[in-house]
Each structure stands twice: as C-alpha cells, then as structure tokens.
Image (cartoon, rainbow, N blue to C red):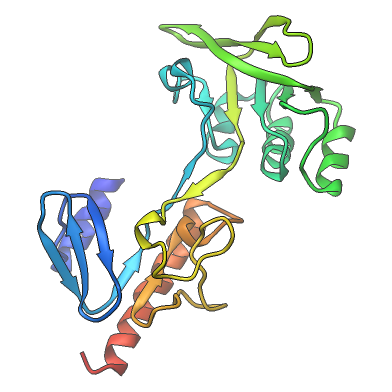
Length: 249
C-alpha cells in the first residue's frame, strides 16, 4: 500500500526525500529543516505528520513478539484474535476502550493494572466492570512475554504487593498505556497541549505558526485511526494550497 501511495504521489511530480529531520526552524519563512546528514531543506509551507508513538512496557520479549501476539492497537489487530484469550495492560480510558472492543471479538479479556484502582473515567470503568468477558488483576505488572518461534503463548506477571509471580496463557497482549506525540522537534515553536500534541485551529489544520499545518495523530489525542489521519491529511493539503494562493506564492 505504501508503494502505491508513493507511486501516486510521483505521478504529480512529488519529490520524495528519504532521511531524518533532526532540527526545524519555524521562526521565519522560508522554514528550515535540517536532516541528519547535514542537508538543509527550505519551504514556504510545512505540513507536520510525524504521528504519535505507542508507549511500551520496555521489555525485550515485548519487542520480540511485537506483531506476533503483542500489539498496541485493538482496532487494528483485534480481529486476528477472534475467539481467543487475550490480555490488556493499562488502567486509563484507552485501556478500557481496548478491553471493551476486544470483548466483542475474543473469548476472554484479562486486564492487568499496576494499581488497585483505574484511572479511567467512571463511565468507562462501569462498562468494563459489567462486561462478563472482562476480568481484572490488580497491583499486577507484566514482567515477560512468553512464547516460541510460532508466536506468543502467554505472560509472566508479578503481584506488586505480594511479589508472587504467575504465568498466564494468552495468544495476544495489547499494551494500552498511552501514546507520545512525536513533537519534540517543534518544542517551543508551536503551541501544544499538556501532553505534547500540536494544537490546531478548530475545524482546520492550522497550527499556531502561519504556514505550518498538522495532520494525523500528531494533532489527534482522541481517535488515532488511519482513516481520520488520512482525512486530516487531505484537509492539510487543501489548507496549505489555499494559504499559498493567499500569499501569492
């Protein structure tokens, strides 16, 4: 699919440059972007679509089984675990949303949370507690993902109060402990919310700097879906095109 995206872009004479941008100067136009190899790119308008990265547990085994049982997106991967036993790690609204979504697909959903109370909103807690397929393990931390060459087989969990360690069999583990927007590059230059997501003018993709636009998860702490990201990508392109026309550039 990505190859098709690139092929379509090239049909319209889009110049695709592979590389990492390590610094950005948005203080004046043209904006300046410096790549890791030292090359400096300049532009009159900029669309930021750097996304948001899922937070992980930091386990080596977690990365080993990423894509082979371990996921950070129930709506993306939940279907592959239909009628199976899965686990969710987290205690916020995202974790409850993941658990409830998976409960409609899976045989059972087990939620592991490091504390004895959830951080999720009351309505989300009530919905999860009432669901017959969802059970909770409190004061529990996943210490290792278990499995073999065929994929994930379970998790090793430690009770943080008693230090007791137990193994549980699951074919899937969904890590739902939040996301981190990839906005460090623009810190101090663009307005962000308390979690680092770019703030945009309501109903548009305009950021706090004229000529700079934001699309996708980098400005979306709520939905974080491919279809919504694609929609704001289209909006950003139109906003940028109209802005350039207004500036007679």
